[in-house]
Length: 517
Image 1 (cartoon, one colour):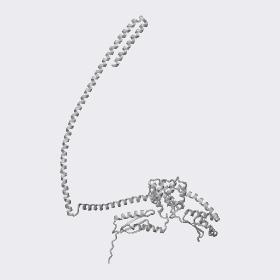
Image 2 (spheres, rainbow, N blue to C red; image 1 turned 180 degrees about the horizontal axis):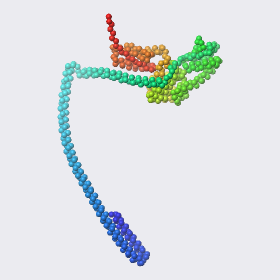
Image 3 (tube, rainbow, N blue to C red; image 1 turned 30 degrees about the vertical axis):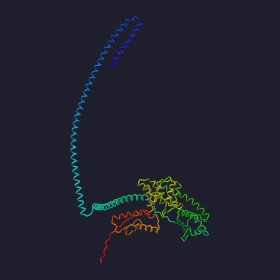
Image 4 (cartoon, rainbow, N blue to C red; image 1 turned 90 degrees about the vertical axis):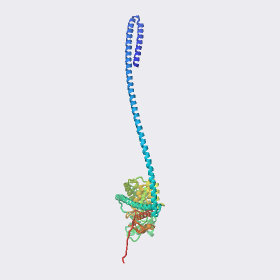
């Protein structure tokens, strides 16, 4: 519609412009063109009438078309509304049916609830009757048995408790046996694997050193005029020279291996040089002492290279090297520390722990022994102070502090180091122990069970590695023997210090004897 109107408007504008144009042309050309203008106006008028008629017809057709489309849309809308009305009517009908069904269900539920309530009432009445009969029966039973309800309950509970104690003891015994078997198997595998991968020679250190002489005349030269040479050697080295009837030999005696080693090298150098007098002795001693410091550093560096440990303070390396000249029950401290480090690394690898940290802790666990004769305190306290001074990791510090049980272990590595320390110290031939200390330890081990009831005799066997406890069969039953074994084990762990492990075996034996006359 708008297009038609626009068209008509444009047509009218065109007509107006044409008329104006014609007037302008006529004004310019004059009267000569008036006839042509009239003809053109007539033609233009006719054209405009034609265009007008065509526009009117098109407009009427468009209006008719729009009317038909509008009527069609109205019919469709009416059909949709009718369908919606039909659906709503059907839905209302369904809702009415549902309401009716729900009403019937509610009536059925009400009827069921009524029946349930009546049944519940009957059940309560029956239960009250049963309770009454039960009380009567309990009263009859009490009269017949002569005991009260509380006393009967107590007896039953005591019986159940006794039965449960037996079951619990049996259960604990079974679980302990299973756990011991599994733990022993795992531990045995790990230790065997660790010992297979690290095999060290048995090391025994003595407190004396023998220096061979080219001839017996050298003894007199070592003693010197009025004994001045031997006094000088003993004074500056701190070592005792024992010159006896042993041919071509002099014995150096000292509990300090470092002093003994310096004295040995000094004396051997003096013998080779041939000039033996106090001044020369002092000169050689100073030179050997300086060379020994370099040798100590070499011992420490060799230990670190062997274990693959890096980033160690040079002063701490020197202290590690001094361990080579310290012994514990005849066992070389540096060799022992390297052995503990190797075993700790192997066990740490098996358990998935930090291998290098375990080796470091194992090497430094006895570092305090290197200077314990110079500083007051136990080697554990000295070792912890040294580790802190040279900024060692906290795992290493805890391993040093806890490897003798003085402090609780805070990491698996600390526990590994303690195990490997005991393993290295307890293997056959690793250490020498005096007979007196050995007998005291066995005697103390046998006295652990003195205050435990039911024990008849106690024997320490296998060099103190096993304790056999014989109990009185009339006072101790089979289950009680397991409790005694655990109690003895806990007392040993609490009261004694020992390398390795001690096996506790409790023996209960019944013997029936008769004498024929």
